[in-house]
Length: 416
Image 1 (cartoon, rainbow, N blue to C red):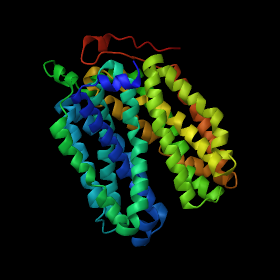
Image 2: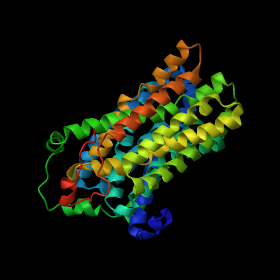
Image 3: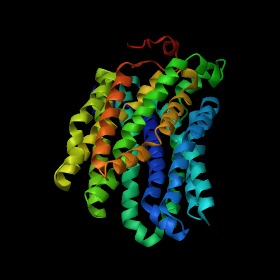
Image 4: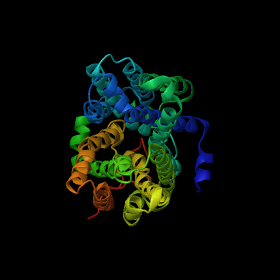
């Protein structure tokens, strides 16, 4: 089945669910990335320095696992659809209120609360979608969902470019409340997960009970997602700094390159998501991760902005290509009873464990006399190998049926 066939095979209800989950993650990422464009301006208004304001980024990342746990448990108990609506509404409200911060303390508290809501969206939206669509469409839809992250980055870039001179940093956060309108779309067009509805007539066990029975799987999933988050943050967070500080490019050139590599990220997620449907989740992740290694030198040592843009496009094509498989992979691996909680909690714990990436790379660059290129290169190549090893020798349940006995009985043998 081709990618177009997969899309055509979706019913109107399934398409509505995919659209809602994609927009939920896109707009969540959009709200998150607004901050990275306005750090300097917030610091100036609050009469502090950029590192003090940048603490908001750490707080957002640190609170995401808590959000994944809270909203995941709610999704497993009360349903994915209702929980997703509450989550989207909350992250929109906290984003809106951020624009009215009266000082740094209020600003940091609101960003921490936003982090809780942000942490809940991915797991709930992904479980709702994966339990709604057909098995044959999972690979493509997984790529679509994960493409929401670079899509949100792109939208934030465009809004900053067009509106910031007019509305300022406070207006940027107020505009970030628009995702609340998505709640109306979900309420009108999205139905509850069929797999969740099937389980309502069965005895429900607690998350901790199910987790205790799947400790090896959960530990492996957290470690895999730690490597994955080092892979993405290690190739994204300090790349603009490298272009500005080491290559001395102006903001327009940096912005243009950022647009190019975000397009590569979207293409990669879709392409490898589809590929994973044919060759398997593990194999597709391994291929994407290892292909990032030979393009890494062009990514940081390319001559001129055009070659660097090509290298960045290819790097994010493979990095986000591997990431495009994550939503379907984690949802297929998740125990049926806790699918609202398991994937998102594992993902966000991995994100927390990898949150020191920027500090590590900046420290390496400082040690090497400001050589960001080598710091980026060494981390990216090492982590690419780690991702390939964890994925290649890990678990897989491609094609498992959700909401049936097959889920518990599917082959999940560890490859050694």
